[in-house]
Length: 591
Ligand SMILES: Nc1ncnc2c1ncn2[C@@H]1O[C@H](COP(=O)(O)OP(=O)(O)OP(=O)(O)O)[C@@H](O)[C@H]1O
Ligand SMILES: [Mg+2]
Image 1 (spheres, helix red, strand yellow):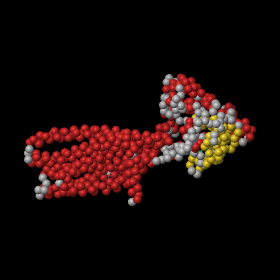
Image 2 (cartoon, rainbow, N blue to C red):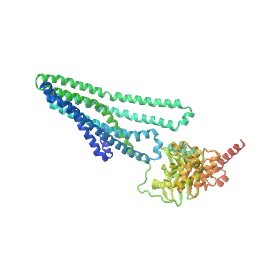
Image 3 (spheres, rainbow, N blue to C red):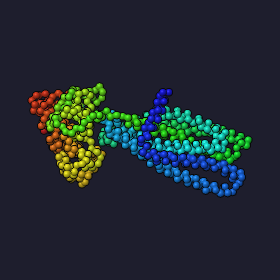
Image 4 (cartoon, rainbow, N blue to C red):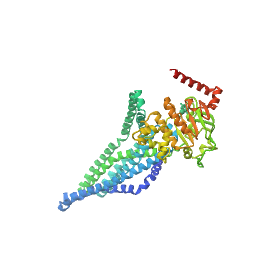
């Protein structure tokens, strides 16, 4: 009982929360709804017309009256058509405006969610819940409310016609209608469970599409087609089962309503015949009544289906507000300060960190990155180097300890000002669909053409771009698919260059490259690192020998720290790593 009340209240609250999205268009929205009143009412006019037609034409045989009939019929229909067109137009306009409003708000929310949110939700869920739900919610709501209302209005008007012609029969017919409502309430509850499962299922279908696109080369090279086909079959089997379950739960509404209606009609005809025979109503009354009843029957047939659609949009609204109520784990502090300049450097103090509660990745990290220095992070794979670098722009918050810039913890700085001071080249750089120029400009939208070429030159990409027939305007494909691995990295470096930020973080930008391109990329990086505070992560130790300081991170701990020379002299973890790589090189030479 309490649960029922809560869910009802929730429905009302959510419907109320939709209001700000409808408010700017309230006039058109209500006009659209208002226009549906006469559309529905005109049905009643036609039914009402049956009485004089029956009594005056069929019984009294008045010729003038019958001459008017064709004009009246056409006139009414034209009027109804015009009103319907206008209301459809208005309602579609309003529905689209609302959808766009909700989508924009959802997208704004998506943009402010933090990295951990994206770690924990797959792309299908994001697509489904941020895009589809908005459409289901508002289109469904406006479109179906319109239908529902117009049918309700026509039902009311038809009920008045019925009452006017015979209140006895009308009472019978209306009492039968009362039987409609219980099944509707019952269906609502059942639907909710199924819809919840459908959302999960449809999200996973979308994820499969997405992975098929992004992972198409892997799928082909590992001949995973049968596996993906199987996954898709399984997911769509679930879709099918859920759709059938939905039909099973909801589609008996319409036939049931037919049956209830036929009971009503049967009763009315039985009692009506008695009323005519006993002279209480005219045959005109009776015909008009039956016409109205039949017309009432038609829209009510649809009420069952409409109800399901409206219910669906209410459930989508619930889900939308669930998302809008989400709070990103990382937010600017109320008294957050702007970071204008870095004077001393970046400091990790007793930093502990875990992505997932209970599984600590970084243990007590202490690291000083003085302004203007180059600090290199090396160590075993999975040791936590990328994680350390992600804490500087506050992509995640530390679990214990602090990361400070000068004397300010990064949590006390506005995220925007903090990130504006940092240019990152990631391990897996992401380029966006569009042209080379557009991708570089993402680093600094105000950059001039000259600055762009300078960035390309520093990133050792100038020659390549110059040789392209479309130069800067060359499309690079989604995620930069049309570029080579090294070109992608260098474009990402150019993007970091043009940002011209005082702090530069380079995460293994030279991995997975052959020696020659590594040298080119290395040159680009050396250019990028000049006169800045740099954190560089590299597997190849040859690239970081000139670093001010090297920190070796193994299994989440800093095990050694010092210059290349000092660490080699020490003969610890670093020198072992170095010896290993040196040996590999020697072996390669011998090959
Ligand atoms: N988003 C994440 N959610 C949960 N765990 C993560 C996440 N990213 C990384 N990890 C885990 O954190 C640990 C450290 O990862 P990290 O990427 O920092 O290592 P790394 O030193 O950069 O390794 P590599 O040299 O291979 O790039 C790994 O055990 C990894 O599984
Ligand atoms: Mg890494």
